[in-house]
Amino acid sequence: MSPAVITAVTAWVPDTMTLSRWTAMEPALRATGHSGWDAWVKSWHPDYGHWIEASPHGETGGSLPVPPGLLPLDLACEIPVETRTDLSGLAAKVANGICSVRPHRVRPIDVVMFCHSIPDEHVSTTVAGRLCAEVGPPCFAFSVSQQHGASPFTALRLASDLLDAEPDVHTILIVAAEKWYPPFSRICGPGIVHGDAAGALLVERADRRTDGLYLLDAAVRHVPQEVGRCTEVVPEAWTFSLLSIIDFLLARHALRCDEIDEIVGQPGMTSLAAAVSEHFGQPNARAQHEVGIHLGAADSIVRLAQTLNRTASLRARRTLLWGYGIGGFVGSALLGANGVPSFCQHDEVRPAS
Image (cartoon, rainbow, N blue to C red):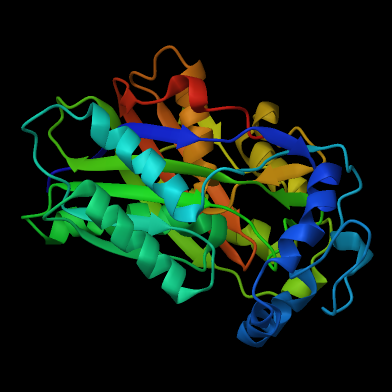
């Protein structure tokens, strides 16, 4: 079996604004939205109803009451907000960023996976279709949704399995994008605020001489939970599930915790980050902010791009990615470096939090 290698990484994080400024803008945006969406979203998943139009001032616009524990306290926190393009535009931006730097006469992209968090099926199929048109034939496109920040880990697992099972598949483009807009709220949990962003990974079938991040393993697990009862302390099931996945990946590759050189996680749930930090004995691995800016499906790709941007050399290094989805998913991926993958748009990968 030829290994799966991440040969290119790119990300886009728009300019930031304060949460208080976004809160002031939100009523006007809500007024221009479709009146039926509020009812549609609440009927889709009642457990999320109290987050639909939540604001730091407690105004829910007819939604279920918002538990005070879900609201961030710092209205001055900076969140990245895209004001010039839509969700499909963000996805196309990073997809074209990778395609534009690929050498001429290389193999075409066979599969495009679009990762996102929007529950509307028409959005996912429309954006996947645009990506297919942007990349060009003969690619096949589909979407991975409903897993929020865990979506890229599912996509990496699928990519590895496709390269193993389908000998004609050689190149897979994973694109993740998020753009939050009423009636969906940017406040998604205790101390967690959604930001807009996009990221992309090019995964290829390669030999051991290919530079890039070798995908050693990836896994995702669903953690059943009552979302409406989240508190600032992550439920024990989340911590247990995430650490179990990490230990499983390490054991399958006969690795110890001290053999991992870089840990890239998603901030927001500080107690979850602290648990991973304690597990590895690396205090710097924990989240550094009380208010975490979560970039949804794009989060792990953006933070990987930021890590590559600040790291001079990843040769012979092992990196562990971990993340979560607010619907109750945790995921992790184990990467081994052989050189550094191509990295596009260096100046456009701004700090996410």
